[in-house]
Image 1 (tube, rainbow, N blue to C red):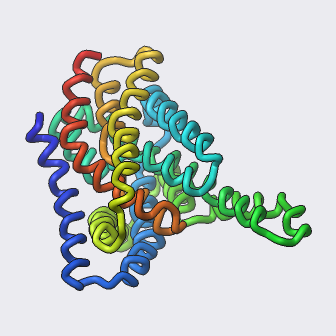
Image 2 (image 1 turned 180 degrees about the horizontal axis):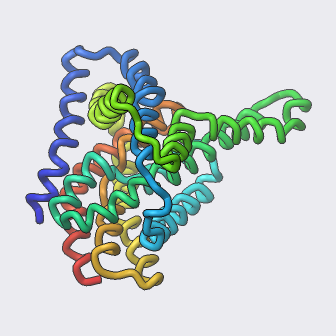
Length: 317
């Protein structure tokens, strides 16, 4: 079991290390990190999301395991958002505590450990993972930014015009590089049309590049940022993601009468380390960048032990 976990996690840790070394060797300037993060957010991420959702047929999804998984994730997200008074920082940290690395780590790990049957449950989670959590985070972030702008405004007229910032935030939360390609891809899938190879292949290549590029940027940011004072917070964030979320998913799943392989895959998926998308969000909104960067790295290293522990314990559910 430990060898399966290591074979899935070590490539992620190596990519973060390569980004760290590249920055320290002056192969990447500090200014490039922001530019590359923007490229990932505006180009690579939409390509991956659209292509992933373009093959999802809603009528083929088993919603009971998915409902249990996202009920637990949304509950934790909501609690953290309320605890942090719904600020942009609270939103990013809530996303970090609930968003798993389901593709780069989840696919090889679940495939090796649980075979094709386990992959069916994982792909059902993946198909809605970004749609639910990233869309929720995007709208919460846009609302938080609008609320902060209204509070900071010195003019009574702007403060009174509260409805307009809210409507603008909701619009920005939908017409956005994350929810928009998700919705367009999902709509395309329901048409049963086949995407032309000349379009599908570039989207595939862009999507493949998203994960490695994000992890390289995590490493570069680790090298450029002063994260020593964030280690304690990063460790706490990693514990929330790697251990508390799977415990909540297990509890909700059992309460809903789930058992066997679907429950096992859901719990293990919830125990996966923080997804690199969270880092891209923190960079995009300039929120909790050092903490999230450290959290992604610490979560990946901690996962070598925590995922093994969860996989051992979940056998008894």
